[in-house]
Amino acid sequence: LSMAVGLLLIPHNFAALSRLAVRSSPLVSMATETSSCDYLVVGAGASGMSFVDTLLLHAPEPVSVTLLDKREQPGGHWNDAYDYVTLHQPARNYGVESTALEAFTQHPEKLASRDEILDYYRSLLSRWGEAGHRVSFVGGAAYDFGSASYVDASGSRVGVDASKVVDARYTENDLPLLVPPKFSVGDGVDLIPPNQLPARGAGEGRRYCVLGGGKTGQDAVLFLRQTLGVPLDRIAWVVPHLPWITARDPPSPLRQNTCIEFIASALEAHAAAGSPPSALSSSAFLQSAFAKLEEEGKVYRLLPGETPTKFMDATLNRREAELLRESAPSVIRGRGRVASLSSTGDLVFADGSELALPWANEGGRSAAELTTYVHCTAGAFNFGASAAEGRRPVFSSEGEITVQELFQFPGFCFNGAVVAWLECQRGLSLAQKNALCELPPPPEEGEAPPLGQVAGQVGPLSAGRLPLATPPLLQAPARTRPRCAHGARAPIGHPLLVSLRNLRRWYATPGMGEWLHGLRLFSLAMNGYSLAEGRALVEKNCDGLVEAGLLTPPEEGR
Image 1: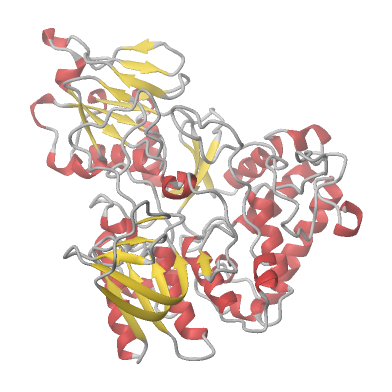
Image 2: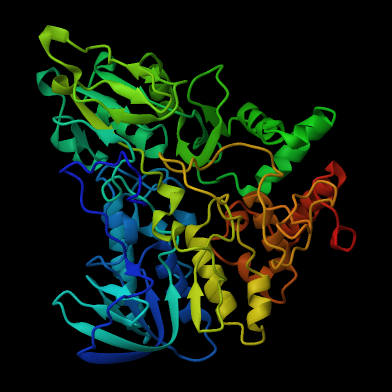
């Protein structure tokens, strides 16, 4: 998060923004003691725990691991999540390779609760120890990459002599509890993170204004309606961008549409529409896939008749979606993002327009006096911790491994396992491992928007750029690829295509396809695809994208 944003004010009830580690230290203190290990894993969240588990399962020889986190226990952002949150995806596709999370949850749809997930991660530390693995967990510690040391809970600095350092906090979620809003807040305005909703209640005619239309905002509105019983006429909900919502209903509530299946849906819908060339350079190609999935009951719109423009794979069942649709009269949309909350409680938008809440001046009291504003605008997948650090390879020659996003929805735990499995393949060189880890395109160069990036926009499949150093198996046709600064054509870099290219490489790597289809975290395996069926789907997608003119074979694209 950049503190250079001129209108950023931090309300008193938000925790100071803290991060798991710093990349460099201007003043290196002498460590009072030193520990050693084969692997130091910085970050004990979903990615870090998955990395460690797969490393322990597949390392050619026994390894020692020090697992370090700023929090007192493993579980990453789940330690900071609001109490009423549940997992968005089926538990059978979340966690680590060795241990089923679904055994820890009582939810009929296997959507594990916050406490169940934290219990699961705590149990893994015991299970690893009982299996004879040498894993030490250090909680309440901040690691300094520059000095190769950490400060523990007692304030002592401990040096770490590790053969390899794994940065597993690169895709750390941004949460409203820890990430202040990017809009300014007037004096006297009651702005809270969603964690504080349970303590507020619905008494004394309290009104609520929920800011943000993503899954956190959806959860907040559902909690207000279902649990606190707040009437609709006491709720205002600011939704800058309408989202597509993944359906979580029979006949397959334990399945989840995957990025590879989504590409197939887009190609089928494009062909059914007569393959219009104009669709390829606009959002129409991907929107046709959502329309097809909607007909099949696999996605929902928040507001019927309104075309969503975002997708972050938030999931709802039909009952929850209908309850949110009932909130339509409370939805404030079409104005963009809120830039500030005035001292009287009015909403001031980025375009300068202002809007008073419906109950402003009721009984002679301002909206600020009557309203609790709920900050749900952090953008969980903005990855603010690493956004300022720059992109780096997954495997570095200095012995550092950075777990990053290699595969789209669902992906966090899966990506940690994939990086660990590749690390265990002693027959692969550093260059070969990185060639199997193409990364999504970095954000466009230039100054970040004052109100932050907008993630999940549904745009052209051809959007995005990647450096030529990333070896593509499929490239964009030379006539359509954007130019790099030196004039050469860059490969297409949409995250969906990055996922497809990576999976195609993995299937071509000896033993990796067999491992993937035995992995509980792999989405195609979760959905019942055999190895042969998975390979066939990937090749069909590649052929379809070539036929559509979005990709060409590598020998033609060079």
